[in-house]
Image (cartoon, rainbow, N blue to C red; front, side, top):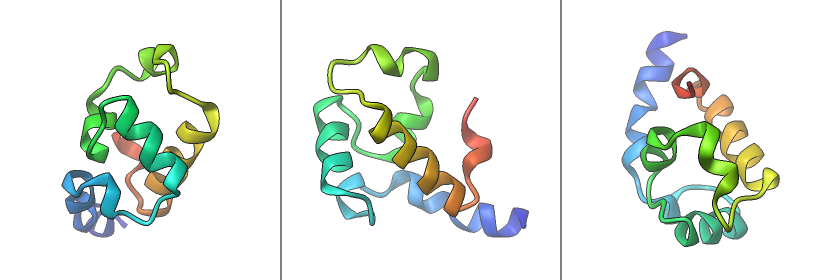
Length: 76
């Protein structure tokens, strides 16, 4: 399954606006200054909830997308 995960790494650097995610997720990401999934993965996960436009729904959608693409291991 690791090869599947590695084959999906390209998704991390695509613009969030081009990914199959909700419009709400895309808007909140933009408002928080995230333009790729790599931006979110690289952020301090413990501090995300302190951002003004953060919501649990947004975070759960992010985690679910990573899980479906076998990239969940990237979260610290």
